[in-house]
Image (cartoon, rainbow, N blue to C red; front, side):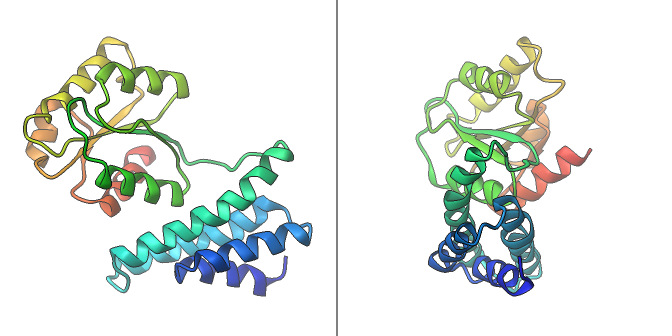
Length: 215
């Protein structure tokens, strides 16, 4: 694939231009370009550039969200072709996300999922009001590396602890990292319940997951 096309793919992600990202993905398939090459050399480096610019405060959350959506839009074009060829996009790890039992807040968790996906993780979002047993069952089924539990109410925070307890009971805790987040959640609470990490926002959640999996 010529460098110009790869650069245009990278730029479409940096600009958060979903239509442009889709058009370039379709063009790549028409020209018989390997979808993995387009992903790994075009779109993924664009997302890395976005992360760097965000860290340097040259980009802000709405920009990053637009970039993540552009990445997702391109992947939606390329993934069916990957499956047809019997190939898979190499994932950095599998993350199971959910809002804990009794809590129906969605937005923060969904944002974490979008950014993790855009950064190369396989994400399975269990939705809201998720019982601890469901987190554990899905983590076992998918051989997940990380479970992320969101709680937006002080009354539902206790169920983050329940998730850890069920993972321990099921013998999954040694290999599954648990991260917690949500408005009332603090680092102190994270340490108190024995979670592996806490993040105050979606961007730091991505950095946290990467750090935990590198250890």
